[in-house]
Image 1 (cartoon, rainbow, N blue to C red):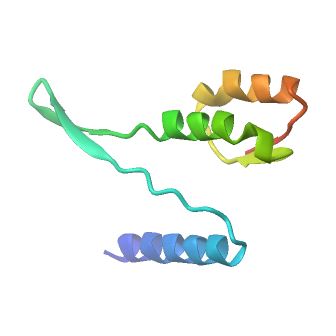
Image 2 (image 1 turned 30 degrees about the horizontal axis):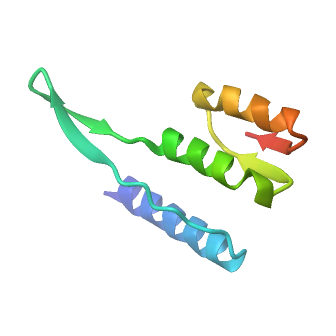
Length: 89
């Protein structure tokens, strides 16, 4: 119970900081599907983030991405070729 409360506080602090910096917050829904009788979480967050990066590439000079997902590598290379500064964590 305590861990869940701390996670909610961290999320609340993050959202407050993002709002104060006037960052755009995009809520990506998580759906559930059943595979072989087991319930699995499905989230296309990486696809949505990549699509947004490509859609808005002419509106920014640099991008900050905090992710351990290797799916972003190709898109980031393309943005670097176009002269975008990349900060990845």
